Amino acid sequence: MNATANTDLKSPLEALQERVARQKDVVAMVQPLGGGALREYVWGELDDEARRMASYLKSLNLPAGSNIALMSKNCAEWMLADWAIWMAGHVSVPLYPTLTAESVRQILEHSESKLLFVGKLDVWDEAKAGVPADMPKLSFSLSPDDARKEFPCWPDIIRAQQPLADVAKPRGQDLATIIYTSGTTGVPKGVMHSFGNLALMGNKMPDVYELSSSDRMISYLPLSHVAERAAVELSLLYVGMRVFFAESLETFADDIKRAEPTLFFAVPRIWTKFYQKASDAVPPEKLNKLLKIPLLNRVIKKKVLSAMGLQNCRIALSGASALSKEVIVWFKKLGLEILEVYGMTENMAWSHTTRQGDQKIGWVGTPNDGVECRIGDNGEILVRSPANMQGYFKAPEKTREDLTEDGWLHTGDVGEIDEAGRLRITGRVKEIFKTEKGKYVAPAPIEGRFVSHPGIDQACVMGVDMPQPLILVCLSPEEEEHLSSDKAKEEYIEGLKALLQRVNGEIDAHERLDALVVVSETWGVENNLLTPTLKLKRNELEKLYQDRLAGWAKQRSVVWAR
Image 1 (cartoon, helix red, strand yellow):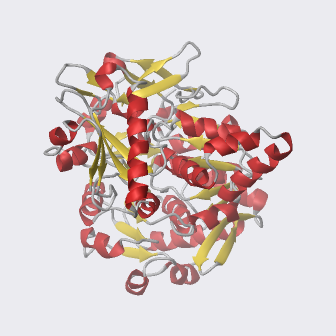
Image 2 (cartoon, rainbow, N blue to C red):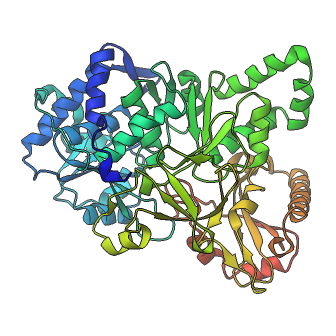
């Protein structure tokens, strides 16, 4: 089965109409408005507002199938704009809400977008320099003040328009969206997905974990990323669950407690943060002892999970990179099984899933319905999915390079398959490097052993053409504050030395690390050292530190490079 065969499945717009017919007066979204205020949207309101915005888009007389860009943090109007674009017969082009002006310019120019929705943003003052002055712009209710004053604003448009009665009826093979990759190695690529691909995800995904309209999710990872779009937007449309939006990073702890999600998807960095903060309050050794006391066991589990807002979570998922065994085991003791999943922008995240009861730590599960997987040259994982992309926008050569004529996608990941068909990812083809001894090192599995250590926020293994690799780590802001005294710093360094010694005893001789370096820089999206999905930009990190690596390696211990 290929992407163009997904033509007989219920489209996202058809799913929306089914929701309205079944749940017209049921709350579908809960949107924070600031200062503790909330707005609840019922399904009938969502359909009405999307149709009114679609009516406005039709009035602009854009060419049929125009690309319309959408840049915003997650909010109700993000999804409504997406649906309105489709209803009006156009293609949505989501942009990450943290992009620099240069990245915004690249994507808007490359995608040939005719209009931009400016939404809830923290970086608009910087990003707007990348937007062509003559590009039409619309603002959301939660847009920055200057955007709401300068551009036509969502509530004003909605009040002035009548709902569009004759909405588009896209075919399965019609282009629905162009999702630009987060660009770990260079200029982002525009991945083209059809309505059929979205329909496949929406129709099939709910069956994997038996999702229902009584489920609750919190939307906080970027909707511009394929995982959040699939897990939240499509689940909302095809299942009718309730979605709560996070207000900000500062309010996230309260946002998740308000949502009390039954389904929670997070990247490893989020799960590790939960683990580290809980471990600061109750060290793992103490927790283990408490959990062995029969009368306290259930109470302790509920208390710890309730502090995170996860006391009602029945499905916990992790993706994007490997989650450390230590974190998975810790949560499992609390009764929460974190299931690792695997997918890519290029296959609409429809690839591999760990089912409940079939967890094998370190593996990302078995192929989803209709998916085939094999290991190709150099250990590369090849996936043939019914949701494979139509190709890269305006890049036919790159499309032929990554997607074979018979439908096999070159993932760029390296891995292995066990006897049960489970997949294990051991690294990236382009991340694996060779030391001067001619031995190959896969950095990701080694990094995973460090990031669960208290205070370590991020880790990066380097060592191209060096005798042995070394690892660089960033500390969390909380740990920085804790290490304000010399005594605390000395104790922490001793803990890092023990960690380095332990990990070196667990890995192969050619992988053993000469040094652990605590760097002073913060690795973030704003300084181009992380992608918008919080993945390391290794090439940028190597440029930043390459002149200092040899000197640090010679110290053969923990280096406090601050």
